[in-house]
Image (cartoon, rainbow, N blue to C red):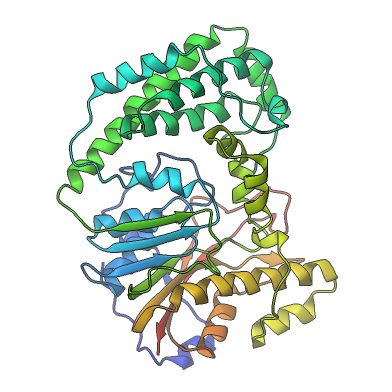
Length: 422
């Protein structure tokens, strides 16, 4: 939906600190589910909701434009760009991106066959070999009998011809390998709970192997249906989605001749960056080693020292309100590396190109951190003009509520900051 937007030099609006109150779900009523088409094939925490991305594409881009997302996550920007006949460049620290995009935004043009998928599933079920992930902590997450069966299933999947059918089964095995573990499979972070352990113990008293096979079949057919719907919708759509997982978005260099028209991104929230930890089990089953996972884990924002001190009026006020040194370090690391990635992504942005940045305002020791304002202040001093900011109040969920972090009451609103490159 097209909105009447603010004038691009509206600094008075920025200084007043009054975001425009909207509901992106109401503004984009054609998207009725955040998991429509292939959006829900892989589980990913704190997904970028497609309604926000679609709003940005409709209002700030045109057909065949190039969009970049340096915090690509599960590829929401890429899928929405493809559906709107735009091109996209996606980068992310998590290797998962390299497995999500080939199935979520497949280049396959012909509908898939249920009988062919069923044939390949039976090949997986018949596997006698074992795939053993290179992770010393694997036994902690499974009872011995379930682990042995999963190792055979994964060996079977990895022996298949690498095609879209194999990718569907892989995506399903990622889900069931967590569902049939001691890990809480519907929660952010990888952790074991007494409730899940109890559920698994009850499962072992039933015919769990048949239940596992039935779950794999049902989920595989559901995934194939989603992929076929996507193929139908995007038939003869030849827009490109370039993706690079396992890279540092702050330093990654995209193609030299590529000019970008818009940035659309949702950086991780302050004190809520847990994407690699959440994906650890998935990554080991996919074949990554401890060394490879540790490499990207060390690059997550909470574990990196700031390489420079970001200073803006609002950020300095927040610093002066926090007494604990460790909180200063978290704050400095977050804004340093978030801004580094955003700046790197906008280097090839055309003049008058828009940067659409979707963030939350968390509290640190009771002090609200106005992330959108800090980013707005910084980028206005570094080559951008403030356009507008939208506030979307969260009605049906509260981000991070009841979690052991500095936001026990949850996130109340999310903000879409719009900037224009000078």
